[in-house]
Image 1 (cartoon, rainbow, N blue to C red):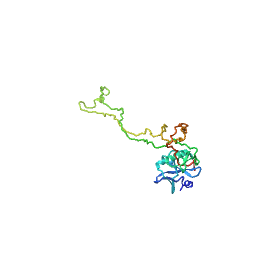
Image 2: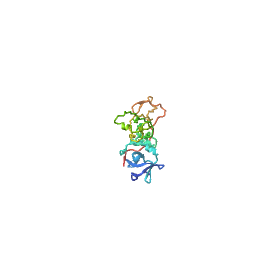
Image 3: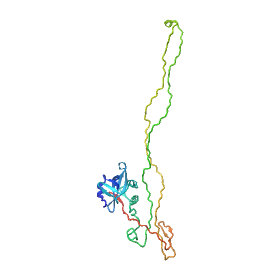
Image 4: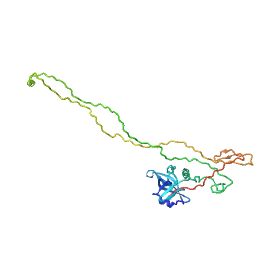
Length: 290
């Protein structure tokens, strides 16, 4: 049973998006509906810290279980979805890129020609035509997505180094002074007994270095990021349909032209001819947020 817009609106704001394994991906964000039918086709999933990242998830095979929306996609696949500007509308080109990412049918909804049920070539209106055929080709749609490339961290550790400094120190030394006795100090000089053993001493002082350690803050270190823009070349194989003339009644085979008006060699009678490959008919119209 398809999910209705009313059911999704009741879950928006508090409902969660889960995988089939019950793993939480994020919370339900915005709802996008088809302009033509009014049916919901996409929801955004808010992931990351405080819902800072938002990616699109298709509702083709989703279901509601209680207050949760269950989708048949892995968590990593949803988080790796191409970043599309969440600007209130989803263009057919943006929808095509998202369908390719999720490998969902109907991504070629805007091809010029498809096959009808009988296998005959049909134009965009669904009517079988025998007077002309449409030649289609793939175009390379290149975008970018943000992924984690690595982590840088600051690590603090302690190292020991020897520091040598020179500090001035002082010490006392003994110096002998001899003074002659005069008439003024004769009485003091002969106060003691003569010819006796005596000792006289003084205390000598000296300074010695004293080492103490103290911790002081010297700087603050933090990590900042800067965005550097570069160029990378990408390559992919694309397919093109070619149309050639098979006319066994004509001896001269006129060349046909491709979309670039470049003549191509005509085929040989009886050789198999390539036919436009059919693509599943997708949904048309712009998806808008509701």
